[in-house]
Length: 240
Image (cartoon, rainbow, N blue to C red; front, side, top):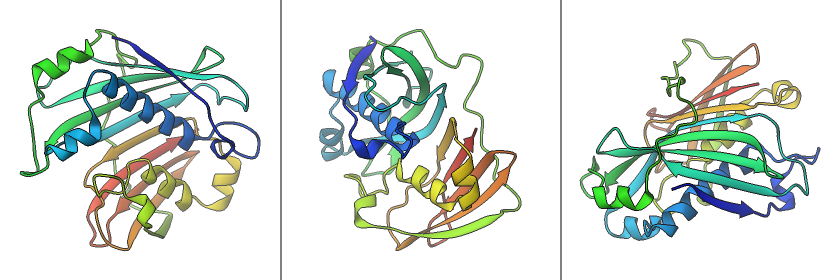
């Protein structure tokens, strides 16, 4: 089943040039998935209250062009036919005035919050999504992101209460904010990143700060984000 929905961005979703930001696109795509889950009765917050949580492990986003202010925004999503009993792949397409402008894929696993172990996804739940055979990146697997041996920049990001979601984890989209915040000013000012790849390793659940270490090579930025205790939490790769 291909699920479709629409969005009405607000002013804060655009940059000074009147184009939708990367953060806004990812947020709307994430909410597209949430709306789809709600439609089939797989309520995210209700699941957490019952001891099970969908955990995002990977993001891959490619932008062809950024929507401009006043363009009509819509999106589509579907679940791929699963190849593992412990998780799913969700694909998403983003539209501006009904023209495809970005596409993304994500990977999710189901976690038993009491045992902290992966849980098998009930086949009835999968069936409710009516999985599709199609995939957006048939020849591009979610390859492992290599951690640079040397970094160009290191920055400490102070964590705010608003960074934490209903799972008591730093919300997954905050890691993109951390990576962008760590960019040298000239790089942030002069480059428009159209590709995003994020891998989540360990949830950032406590501490006062995140430690971000970044390497920049020819318009490609790789940021490794660590907890205050030194655990690797996420790797964010940005490319023009």
